[in-house]
Image 1 (cartoon, helix red, strand yellow):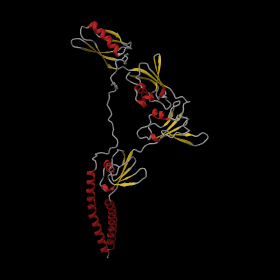
Image 2 (image 1 turned 90 degrees about the vertical axis):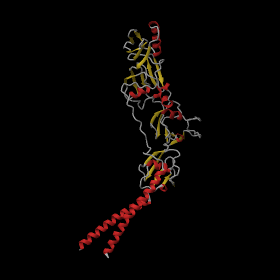
Image 3 (image 1 turned 180 degrees about the horizontal axis):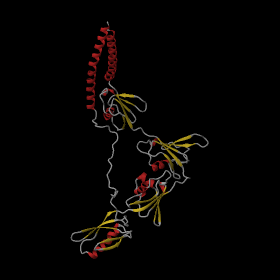
Image 4 (image 1 turned 45 degrees about the vertical axis):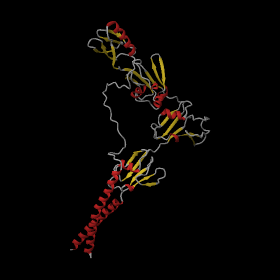
Length: 421
């Protein structure tokens, strides 16, 4: 009787060892057909890096061609002067500390504080008196460095070597960046006998270069501190720069959001609100910023909201990712692509050998957790694409566990039978 039990266990183990390869081959064939029907992606489309540029240390990085009408010459500028001889001789020369430029065989000229255009006109006049044909060509070979003072609300105030091709924002970055109390809407440029006030926040929000002018020799750039009497507003939400901000006097909420440039495509601006403390209560009034239904708490302004001290501007975020889980090679979050179906995201994540095939792909909705099954289900932002494990694989796992247990039992019975003999 005992031997018959052992024999039955042996037969069961042999049967399991025969069934498991068959299940594996059948499932692999199904997954191969599924992978062929999906888009071909060699790697998951997550983020792409931008290769860094290996720029020499002293290489003049320019944003555009230098304008001869606006560039002012000063000590340290290096020129290439081409003389109109029969071989067109090119001579390099640098403006000296006293503002002069020496051109061999031609003369020494006072060029400091002239524009490039004015200098070229002067050389045209010299050419007419010295050469019968041709004219002296003036080429700025390398812009000079000069000292600029960056003071006020920056992390590292001091004197820095800059070029005339640099702008106010470059000076701020070199000085460590503005502090939390920096009032970038009233940056002051002290230039010789005049003072220029620039609203740099307009440059960040509009990209208009007139709000980010170029620096000149001896400029003193002063970043003032916010006036403590200005309304202090907290901005919260998944935005670029949450925290405390000062609002301008009478500034509307929409103008404020544009100025702080903290919103992007991931933010739901239409759901933005102001939480305003109710006097005498520990409660907040919630005011929709972009709602057509104006409330009495809007400072009496019917067309817009003016920010008050203590306001909290809340900007909710949009869920713009799609999550892929289950029997895939690269589970995780992927960018939302309009028009992509469930099978497309399964293709991005890579179907592995444990997947249940096309019928095993389903979508779990983000808004109500409802489940829709099938490879052609449309996917919305925030949804989860689940690639289920094949039933055969689950059965195979159970059979492997059973085979292990049977093997252990068989070993135990064999050893016990041998000890009894």
